[in-house]
Image 1: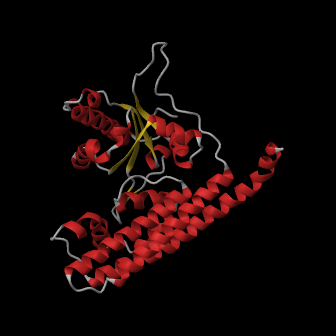
Image 2: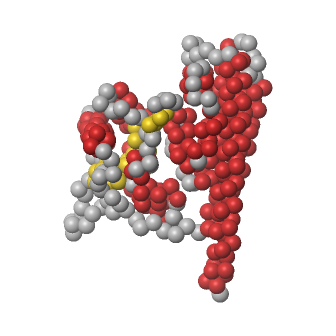
Image 3: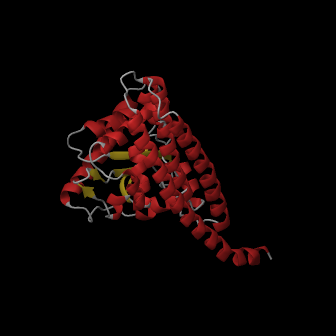
Length: 322
């Protein structure tokens, strides 16, 4: 894994360095306040920049207002430290509000054991992260013989048949959920009472989230533990830019309509101040329907490739059995 940011300009390098500093300091400050000795021993083992800023393919479209996130994999020492609400909400809030950080920062948090298990299994997502990522931080953690306790496993070679079977199950399951949520949201989109409209908004949020999870899990066999549609959208459009077409045109009032959909996961259920309309709900349902069509085509292309890979590997598998 690379450990230099030479492909970024100096401004971006300074911003990444500052993000690294904020993450390490903010988490450590929160852990230090705990009364539990065990919690105070929790720590970050590795911090890895991945995605477009690691690959050098980031974008910043001022016309639409859309731009690449800084994507970071945080590898931690204990399973409990992967709890985003307990340990990371304050860190994410600081990253969002800090005026020195000009881009959104997306964190995914996993233990070293889980990352290594995924690498040994040849899981596409984590293999890509390690192969293309940039190591920003590594804990100095060695055993009595001076051997590092933070070594990453070498990525294994995935079994093509198993990969195709898993991806096919993800595709079928999440597509069914997406269709059910979309149908339910559409059925109540014409409601004129707040309860019916908000119920529709929540169902449509779930439909869009299901579409994005369908794509992520079919293509990469990994989806981050978030309900934030903006983050899921960015991950998916990095995989297949055609998905952006579903939310066109990127202008008022449609940008606000998407933001209302994003907020619906919490606010449509719990906030009396959340407001939508049959017209907005109808637009959201139409756009999600288009999103599902594009994602469906993208997933089928991926499954066709996985099926071809499985067929190619079949003779080799048969010869090993003999």
